[in-house]
Length: 63
Image 1 (cartoon, rainbow, N blue to C red):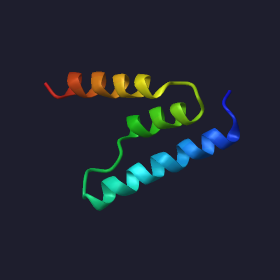
Image 2: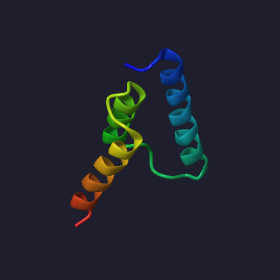
Image 3: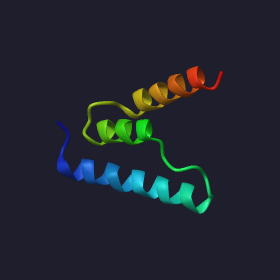
Image 4: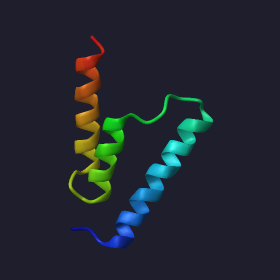
């Protein structure tokens, strides 16, 4: 388990990313991205694993 301070830092980072996307009028965060984000915040997945999961999901569903 990762320290609470790191979880707080990661949560703030995701909020900032969501706010940036909102300002750019991009689509809202998907349910999958939110779920994976929570797993990253809690240290269950690495950032690379989250990116790989999202890339795999969207490549399969874009065809």
